[in-house]
Length: 110
Image (tube, rainbow, N blue to C red; front, side):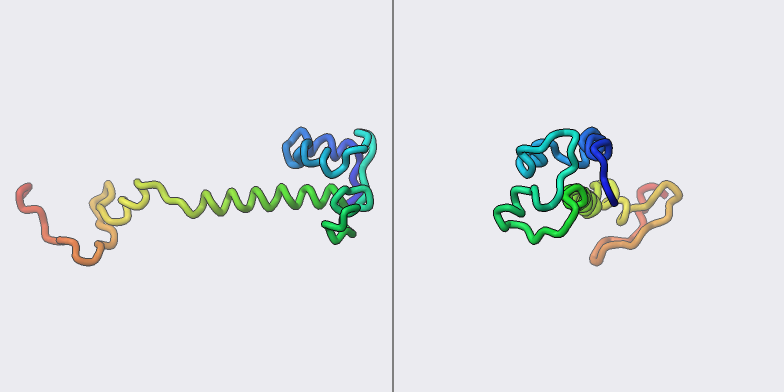
């Protein structure tokens, strides 16, 4: 996609592109100019393969960070979710009982 300065400004406001990182990569860039890959400091120093649109490159960094955050959040279960797996719910149905657990009925309430 061909990006305009309005696109870049919108991405700055939404937080999809970090302005500090943008200034590091394009230190001599005017705000009314959308850069090319050859203008990037990484490309000039041969740290990058090049051939990509810089805006897409920065949006890819944002997408990777978001995916990493989502993966970290999905891996954690709350204590309540873990406990609910082994004990009865409000309807009295018992979930799977862990191995070695005492599954006899509590006769003190009969």
